[in-house]
Image 1: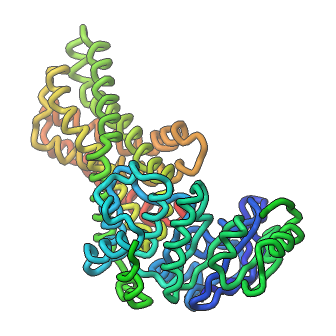
Image 2 (image 1 turned 90 degrees about the horizontal axis):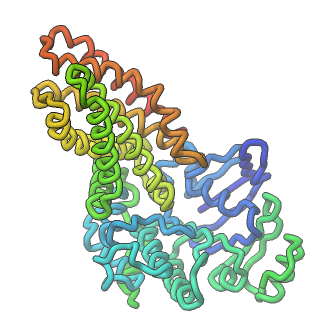
Image 3 (image 1 turned 180 degrees about the horizontal axis):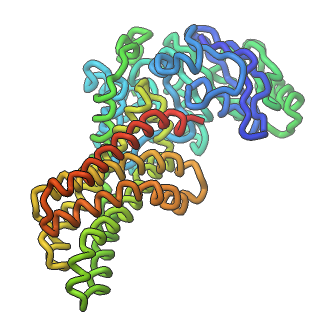
Length: 236
Length: 242
């Protein structure tokens, strides 16, 4: 579903990605680990068509980027550490705006469905700026799945959440991700990242330094592998 | 929390494959901007307070010079509108960037020019509202009647051109650290080609000069609008993409 071959990204004279090759199969949940500055967000922004790669090839659902970016965007749902929502609009108004941008049929019905799915249907009329960080992140998931995309890109979705909010987010992510969607998630939180994944990879120094199926990995051994690959200690 | 409805849906929503038309997407952005502004009143109120204070200052500065006050009223109107407009442009685009919402817009499956035209229309409306409030206030303070039929097309053309080029420049400057300073530095020299014919046309109308003699300024305004908006349409994609 997502195929990246030798993707390079250079900002000015600073290379951030130095030839990332990674494949995420249809219906697969891949967690991409890596320390701060490894290029995880940059890679995700390229897949999300917000950023153009300097070199290499990348395709989503067989559609090459950036040539078919318009078509690819309709297939993607993105959740990042920012909710990408308007604080001065209510949850329902935010989703109605995005429903118009995605040209959805019967938007009112779909908005009710996704708000119910993330447990915010009783607060639909409240302004987003009155929401807690956890509620905003749940609404961000509702926004991301509003058009029922087959591919979800999650960029550090747990950032700024307390334990309860992170556990709720886990539950919602688990439900939306176990519906045959392809999911690519970046994080440096090993226990949460391993929890949902079918496969894991580590991005270090702008390249994929490690890749393995989730089965057979536990938090302790993977933390040791992560420390060894990235040269960082104390990441559990 | 129930997720039954979500679970029962088909894997790929058929609507995800239908492209959104440019007009529909731009209209959605205008609706969103107006709705958010109606709630917060952050942009128009800031522009309005600035504009009213500016014309008060001009009015007091020219208090004892009746002839000079009448002669300069068109220039005062446009100078005030341009500075208030710059304030509005910075806020309108800056708010998208600060809340990360620009990424949300860029992720939608619409032609990037729809984002440009949507933001342009919103900025045009904000400046238009300020202009409509300024006209009666200026008529009183400067003792000059701005209520002439052809003032409206002059205002529409001038504001459209300024908002058109301003939306593009503001989209560029929001990625920089000193965007509040950079926006006017980049925008005002370019906007002179709109400001000069707009002031000349407005002043001519206030002095009662026949429209035939002012047509050259209206034509210049229309031509500048077409050139700037066409350029912005072509460049916007490159400006907003990393």
